Picture: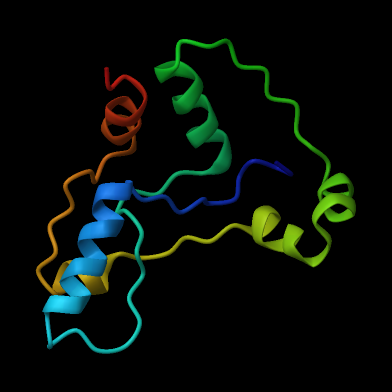
Length: 113
């Protein structure tokens, strides 16, 4: 999408669920927290890893920005600019990610028989 250099936050569904549970049960958690994995990847890196784990060939033509803007309007900015969000605050509260590595998370999700 766009340049492919934009950072794309991600989180495994189990970690997201566990963060919600921790927020409900832990009275010390106050204010907003980023529910994102601690590992950062660009859109291109994420796409290549996903294709590799799925054993699918990858063909990465960059979808031009103007096409995304036509399709998504103002929301295209979220896709095109990305976000490098930190998990430091939730980690400082003692949360331990079950799936901190993208490769392991995708493998677990996609190769789970």
